[in-house]
Length: 268
Image (cartoon, rainbow, N blue to C red):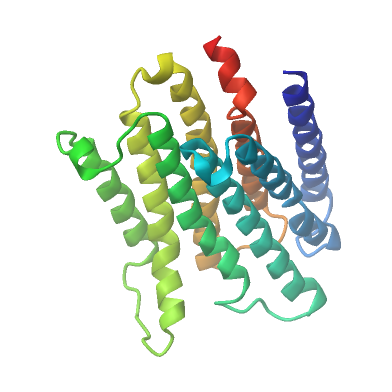
């Protein structure tokens, strides 16, 4: 318990530092100030911290030898992928001094996070006793309605009227893959919550809820980024970056809730 509190306190100190820095920059400097660029390039350290903690926690669960180990490993890799994407974008902008290309190596990280989070949710649901399959949802109307609403909304906001250029297949794939993939992982998370009932006396239910809340905040951050990028109003160190910081911070706390000792202490 003491170790868990110490690890959470480290995350809290990092969070308060970056939020304070952002507030100072937001109200005192211009958007193109170097301070905003530094913030944008460094707040991902929270994701890196979460990834490192996640790898250690996953190892305690046996890594790929257990469902919980697999789930935590996928979420950790997802955080690492986010940090990889951010560092790559920062390299293009601040070291190579070029306009960030699209698609680019950074998209390997940003887009790669999506299937990793989907797998993380899938394994977490199975670890909680949920059989995530069409059969388990066949009598639940929300299993059809929720993904349909989220996917439809993502399509109409980001893809309606989209002109497909088959000479750039990777660009087309990412243009569709980002909004639809993000809609898929949040849909699966919602469905997992809906079918988690009384598992392990309710212990896993609340831990799944914590993960879901972190994913929900990141989904909002992803949605906001796609929206402002489409509008051409995105800039380094903007409000969108703070939302990503909050999402990473929540994921760190959520992963700490999945430590072996944290769960066993509730069972004894």
